[in-house]
Image 1: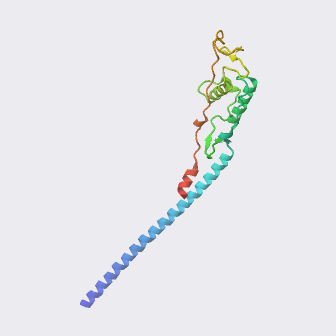
Image 2: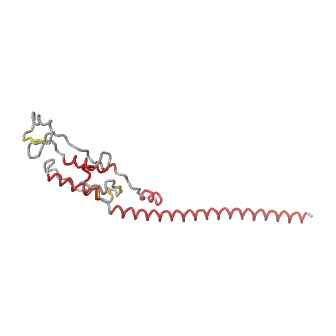
Image 3: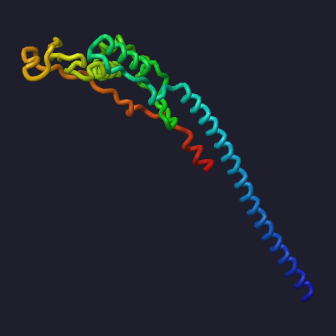
Length: 202
């Protein structure tokens, strides 16, 4: 009888031991599987972001460099034909750019793209076209009212050969600078996947 009980107890202990091993191995396998699955998902995400970075870099290569947009020739008198030509060439580069990129490789949308400079003259306030026209006026008027070749521009648009007190007193005073400077710092940044890729691989 005692022998039978011993065998029963041994069988029960063995059963519990096997069950414990089964649970332990099952737990280990589950952890390993989860880790493997997480690794595959991570690798997949890294591959996706590498592709996004490649596309981002390709886009950046087609963008206009914000640091090399060109220089407006301010050596010419304000409102002169030469000054206007230089200003229009500068803004033509801006309005024809697909996008912009800075020295860090950050890409920005170009909300001024396809603005027609000629038509911007009659554009209503509050539009992108109007913003460009005001920026053109601002740059054309650099140095107003005093001309580099001498003399002044008066408020009614007339030219006075003199400079100083009393100049333009009968012509609405000195001319003021028109327009408003274009602030390219306010451009909208295009999502940069390089940041997330660095987090995934760092």
